[in-house]
Length: 219
Length: 412
Image (cartoon, rainbow over all chains, first blue to last red; front, side, top):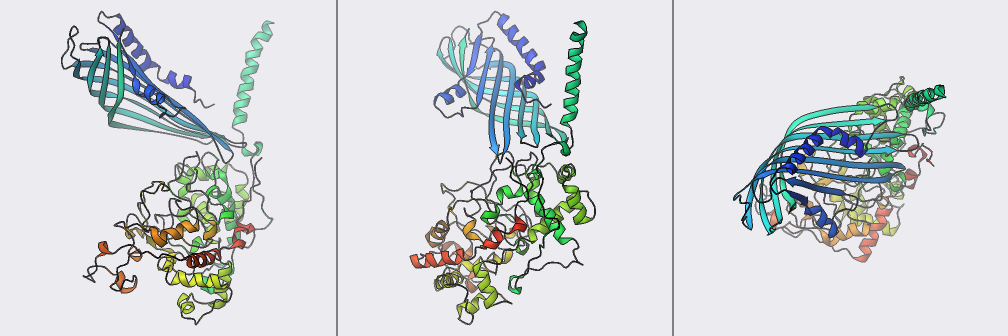
């Protein structure tokens, strides 16, 4: 009756995902040198053992140009889940997060032939974020669910630094200021027929710390 | 064949519809665990000596008192009082541990840890403030605050709780006998739970027997100290501990009164080490309550009844044993700016308490910031005596009292 699955979660994001992949297709069909982006932080965290094993977290993307101004699209996802026995009640907690971010980037010096080794970069993004946090609790005589679904759309300003490690390998770190319209829905249900649903709508701004370290590779 | 091919999906659909409706069945059709209760409610009013100050309303003042307390007992032990049916009040307040939990922090309905150590329950009716930060000063409304706490029991509102109870078939007769009406309501839930808690009287420890025998009318520890009252019911070690408690060890400066709870309304910052590895790192801010004026880091002075059973100790459960607690007061009090003045040495003669407890505007020569924390440096004999006295406050009748026990049979 209640679906916490990834399929349901992703299907709720289908419109933003479709737009995202259309944009990626147009980027790949353009004439400039494309690049693929990979957030190295979750990978390195995992390598050094500081990331919880149950947590899956990855961001990747494409850009229309490696060394000059151009479009960029990122898709990020996170998933985690735990199962716990709490006084005889099995409590399954699942978190899902998908974030899409597309926009244009400008280099302080846009030179596709002789790019400087290090240069500032800034940009503007449109973004979509959908997060679902929920628990399913079940015991011999009672089941209940509690989940919070948050969808947010907005714009973001981006500022960062580009370091060219090799002609086709760059390292980029960036920080972002997001302004988003947020819809948060809380749903509670239980096997006695109890149901509660409430939505809150609000504007939100947040400063993302520079925790994304992207390895950018020429395609 | 074509008939079969068409009818199979129809059959599956019909089964699904049936299963869907079956999923919305009443509690009659589930394996719901129900409480096992006596045919008539037990007598919940306890008779105690006047010294304990425990009074109960008469039948005229509070009709069906026992039935209300019995309903409160069921509510207290019913895990359906949490949104997901995982935890009840007694998940964190275990009778065998003096209604505390032997863990620093407790797990709430979704296994998240609570912010503070679960308070033990003994004579909550003799308390005037509740929770470590004193944010509640009325037992009737306090009893349902954990129900709405998103970590503890997780109900969105108390009306949702009343609706939940309305769906549990065993509550209608209990509400009927307690209130003359089978319908649960927020006020009735609070009334029943708070009535049950007021009935949780713990006044029959060996020490209590001695107190009631030696000074049945009035609490008079000073009479014991000056020798005019003899606590015959205690052994010499326990008596020595009692005298230390009210004398050199200065415990009674905070844990005063016959319930050893600061007369039910005291708070103190006792100079816990904020950098201790045993600290759970929880902030200690008073967020409300009538007595919030004690300071942002002050915690409620808990009752010491059944204290030997209620470890770990302090608001964050940092001390596992009574020895750890005695170590703290013996030589571990930290010189934090917010340290309670009763725990500083700042009298002109090196003493503390009395008129020296008044501060600068009244006694200009006294500077709180220069007064060091007290160092009681208990000897081994003193520690043994203090522990003997604290152990004599254990009320074994209370922790085995059927009236407060879990009426729900254990689930397989």
